[in-house]
Image (tube, rainbow, N blue to C red; front, side, top):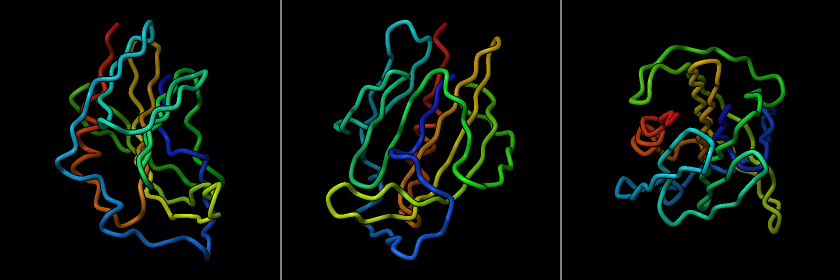
Length: 159
């Protein structure tokens, strides 16, 4: 299974300190996407060029400002807290996926303690008994529709 989730494990409880998105928090439409193909994992996904990468035992996290993408293998795609999941089938370039969206608070910034309300877009792809979960996160109101479509359409099984 592959998971791309927001960085830091958001909670589903509304938070009074959650910040509102500013125009600079959106992913620019001019962003260049490069393929990420971890050796021996059997998938590829394009990620924004220049984003900070942190390797994990189960995948990798890519972040820039208040946006994040996390790719993992073998992780169950549970939503945070008591979020109700409504999965809907969607067609993507890499095949059919089940999609859900929800809002959650980010983890507090380690320096400022600031919490941002995030919009989470999660896609579950399956093939031959394997499951991939692609979760994209950014501030609520940041209008990341175009870049998130590029990201979700870029997922491919390679083996």
